[in-house]
Image 1 (cartoon, helix red, strand yellow):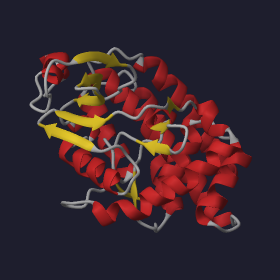
Image 2 (cartoon, one colour; image 1 turned 45 degrees about the vertical axis):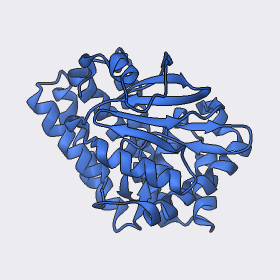
Image 3 (cartoon, helix red, strand yellow; image 1 turned 60 degrees about the vertical axis):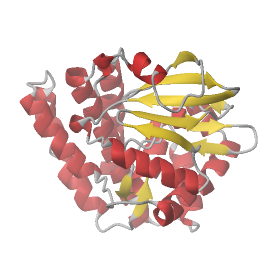
Image 4 (tube, rainbow, N blue to C red; image 1 turned 180 degrees about the horizontal axis):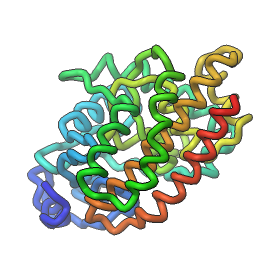
Length: 294
């Protein structure tokens, strides 16, 4: 299912609806087209999107992860799924912003949620174990950009001496079930608790990738980042862990930068990928400098 196959018509035609529905677009999807549907007095989110080979998105893995996250009490219930579409219970609440996440009270609520996801989703996950290793993602994006004759190839030559050094610095890892896309918009606060949604990139990974992504995507200060790491691991941060975390934070920003470069070539969604690329490239270079000073 590609985006040009009329996502709205597909959403309206799903077999799960009990009668006439009202359907409204939901903003913010970067790899899906999303709708809010009212049916029989209840509200649902419909996510429309097929596999995206260039980003390693496999919808069967996203569905399995979404179901496991719901069973673990982390995400809303999956009500229905069919090829190219997934229907979830709608969570009434506030979608978080980076400013919300930097609030110490919110950060204190997110640490146990992330730890819970990392440790408990595997108890419920069904099917072959997916892997998300950011350095392999970066290597694959490099090939995709070369094949697509990206305008960024001259910049890539300069960037690509970094990943091997960062991967070596990360070293052997603890393996957890990662969300791997901790943007602020993937957290919803319903007033009582926070939910974590959108499992497009789910897979086993180092916890440092989610922690680094949370820090970099939401512009945490060095002090906030240190607090995050100490509270996640429940121990004071030593120099070794700090350096590994800085390496993974830089890697998360390089992966985000290259995701955007690839999207400039391959995505048909109306998103300003050029601006997103340049913003993340700037942040990657700052994170790499911080790693190299450590």
